[in-house]
Length: 147
Length: 276
Image (cartoon, rainbow over all chains, first blue to last red; front, side):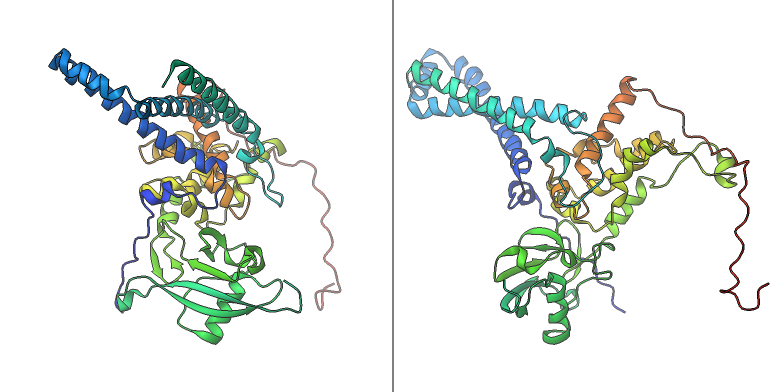
């Protein structure tokens, strides 16, 4: 009989980027990774600007700054702040929940099933509430500072 | 869907036959569904009446055996446990469970799941070899002790949590929610003392720390097992042991032999022919 190897079927990166019908925490997971990568990207650009461009003299530095002083870059900066707020607070939630806090105890599975994340969703919602408030505060700060 | 009204449902099924060397492709079948009909009933109808070459795995038809896990409208379900009516759609897309190798059509290879399950030593481990080899009595287990892990004993090894897990999707060496939840089930057992042996298996780059709490496994689990909770409690247990918090209790001792023996119930005469 001919032996046939099973066909690999891992979803790969698409498997974590696409959440489909899954619920809130699955989307928070994607956002956490995306904001993490965004912050890393910002850090690399920021470090490049403040080191490479700076040592090339005042002219280069001032030319770079004049490009950056436009509303789109300001909006980009605001997005970095939003990403930082989200990543920090969701990270705090993850640290607490991964250490078994705010997760509850095992309970007998009685239909309809409710997993611990859904039972303790009020903490997640509270975290989202704080994120929104902080984002609004910083938005006001950016607006009042002038674009 | 009315009881009398039968709807025409299109089953769009992913087909793959390794012997023909073709790429996975979709084939459509029209099935007349009635109230209460499950996805599995539809597949059995197709196999019996429309295309006998369709391959899928099934056994108990009551969500006990864990054979018929498949991706239905892009969400993993047990086909026997899911009614067609639930989707409120006349079109169903059925694919094999992702993150597990496909053998044929909707049949996936569950060997990777069984191998990782075996790797976490899913049985009671004790240091008293003498008692383990020649048991004199059973080990004690309090009702509270049982509650700590009972929820996680209902695993039917269907592979749905693995197909729902975004980490399993991008890391094929990840231990996976099924094995990690079972690891906690045994580590939380008061009769067990094999914690350190299991920790050495899961305390790796592809082990317990690769779970980033997306919660998809618990959402999709057809038995309400909550693997995400088990994994986080496992992390807590590992951290507690490392920093020296949380007292490790001695493993449960054996039940003292019962001194009061009940009188033997006489064997009923009417069941055994010729008994005195």
